[in-house]
View 1 (cartoon, rainbow, N blue to C red):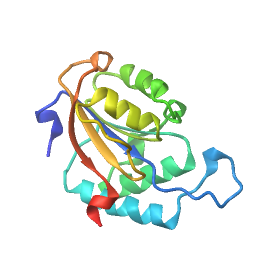
View 2: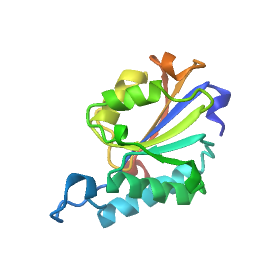
View 3: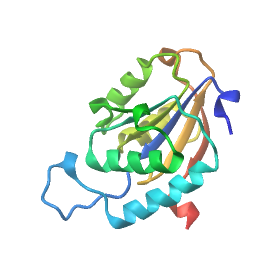
View 4: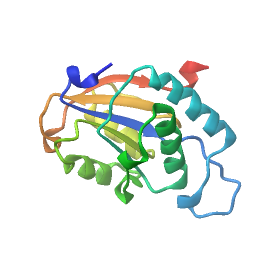
Length: 168
């Protein structure tokens, strides 16, 4: 499925997998739980069926987001060279992430972002045309835009969502 046949710019929002709070580590270093890893694998394998070709993969530097990203990349057979780690995605409100998106190079048409809530839920509701209450851990929402430049994105179309609970 080539989403860009329908929309010129596409964002795939993927929230990190369920993380563990039982380790006394800084938030940036919080690891995934076993359930988080199994949910990521479940969703990534389903997402693989869509055959989405991305131009860029960007992850928050947080361990739980980066580990989620690497599991997805392995499942989707995306080269590590496609990955950028950007601290602007370690964002819980969405403003830094939106600024990052609006400043992307326009030759990137489909991007996959790995990050956090509440920022991702806020952006999905701001940019898409379907409100979601919450982007769950390991959840995916894809939003498309009929624009040529990232700086022009505003009102997009929510193309689909994929949540772990829907696959169990």
